[in-house]
View 1 (cartoon, helix red, strand yellow):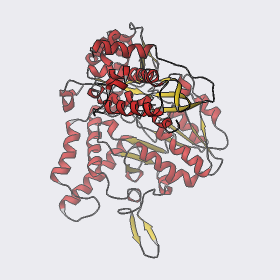
View 2: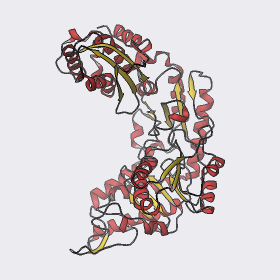
View 3: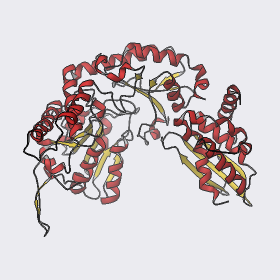
View 4: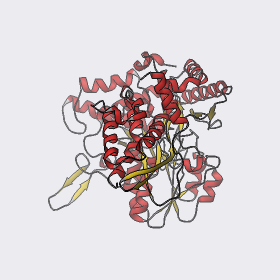
Length: 139
Length: 397
């Protein structure tokens, strides 16, 4: 992918992220996620019905990469079954850690395929997916 | 000043993260290497030449620290692994036995984690009450200290200079207040001892904690100062070799006198010797010269940054050589990554003062913390990079 296009997608998702703002609704599962650098702090809410993710909301303060990755993750996961979610999670983590992965399931998230070049930012790109790990068993 | 003494500055590096740790001059590096290369031995153990030399060098540093903070005796100086270790020992070695349920300890929301968490643990353990002195525009005022004191207040524990905003607390007045009201005064000197004169007698400080690595010395070594009568009562939180005079299988144990009683195990000998070299080096420059120069740098930066409206400075008016800022609309970590692209090292985050955000309303900031080897030219470069930050996301993303 052209680096300029990648940056545009990242910036667009950072500046106008999908589903920012939490809702007062007990049917959502709420997860807080903290980067080990202790800076980023995101709250995510997942609504699961019939083993499918039907909605995700988020809010918090985080860097451009964490915020952008959260937005892209939300877009990708809504409507997915547990099996599909696990596949996205595994392939995304493999991509970040430079292992073999299937890019076809990752959509926009493919923009982070070179984040390993900045090792200190890998954590940022993985941050929203840490919250996903915490809820996937409940699907 | 003195840049040629710091080998790391031969690289293309602008280091503005001195609040986290400082760079090391060749003399400190040499002192550590000399111990490892030429006279390695344990302390307080052997009768051979090198061991005696180690003893001498190690104990010499106690005198240097004593002179640095102007306490009465070398016996009041305990070598620890750093400020966190020192504060933990004060809380769990002394306060745990001295305080009772319901006794109040005053701190603030701007303290470093290491001056909050031990107290919160003790609160759970023995039922003391941790209370927060309200901050006035993020600062500690003597009025608010006075108003926070009740008849149950037994301890006030504060950073001399905070690591987030760099404000210098009115410790002289607080020290007097504590003395008059029989309150123990604990001071976290991690950010002050390297930068300003700290005289424990003049300031009526009962316990002082600080780290070598924030004052040109090696990591993993620091100081716990305690007034002699108090230190005598401080129970060792670690026991073992080097600190006992005798023990029997039936459990009769006798510990050594100060300071050995509080230094169990083989100490960080290389670290302590390195710290000694760091103190010598600082004294040769003069702490007052350092204080003055850092303030000059801070004002120089503030003057230059005035005409960059998108840079928001949160601590214009505080004395210490530290700037807390953000670029408007940019997350602090993104700013730090951007500056790193130009080899400018700053710290982003909440700087281990996680509860300050409740007061500051800004969760994260970028922090520039100066030391005497920083220059106006480095600040000029920083200003230029901040001014040209429209393309920040081209660099960060």
